[in-house]
Image (tube, rainbow, N blue to C red):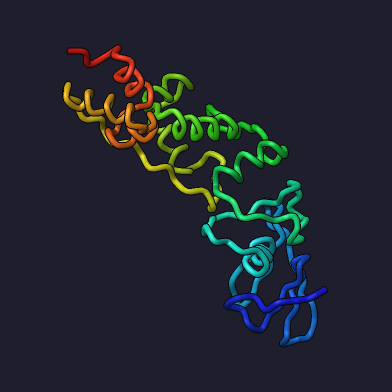
Length: 214
């Protein structure tokens, strides 16, 4: 099996199965499994995950995607054919689909990790508020903020905190008319909600003339 030099680590080569070869010792190096089940190795006093080294070396990433996914859900299968670059959201959805993320409720927590991920997904896709989520899940706004900022619940260093919505400004009747006109011109409700810093439901009500009528 062919081996290729690892970018930035010229004294080490890696094959398509993720085996690391040292040109210093002329031997394949031993790896270890971390507490999350990922195979890793320390090179030049720095720790690396094997699947990321394989992806960086063998798989093109033209869209500069941040994470590497194991297609079959097996963290020990680091062959290049089993890896793909993906977004954080795609990686999480795949983890649920393959059973890697399972609901668990640690001590002193009112929600499971699965519920925390549901909250993150709902906040991103529905433009709901932190207050409404706190009421729905019977927790404090602080807990919701902790979840959105990747603190405590199902924390992974690869996850990125979600940008919080700013306080919604008061709209004028002219703003409402602009929203309706832009929607007719082809703007989506999601894009309008971001532009005017409103929830998806609020924009929909304006478009349907349920609010801001003359």
